[in-house]
Image 1 (cartoon, helix red, strand yellow):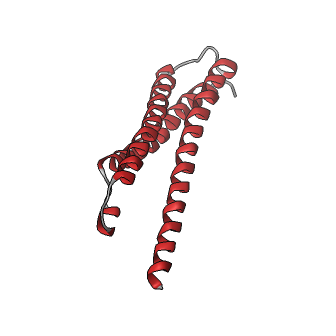
Image 2: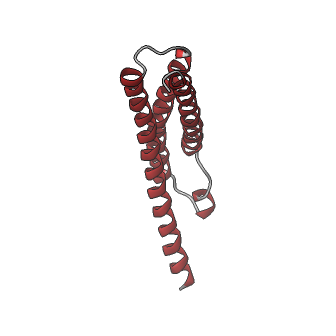
Length: 135
């Protein structure tokens, strides 16, 4: 009987993990796209003639664009990992090991998260340089 409960518990954990992964991917994409849109609006409406340090904005945009690309790529690797997992026969010990696609997805998500932070930081630096003279 405990084996049935353990299986049910593991299934619930896997579903929760899958949902959390989906939510994280969506959040990452939303934040990166939102930061890009907000910064372009800032550039267009608030600082159309930036006083200085425009390189910070360009770097921030490039980093956020790379973040979006890696996030989208992680969707593809995640699907490949799930397909591999579905096709993979094996005992319980094999089910708990990450396959190559799953490892790639983890690395891509981590990289995209770091890039999101870096891109937003670059845009904040650009905004600070260009808001100082407007006070």
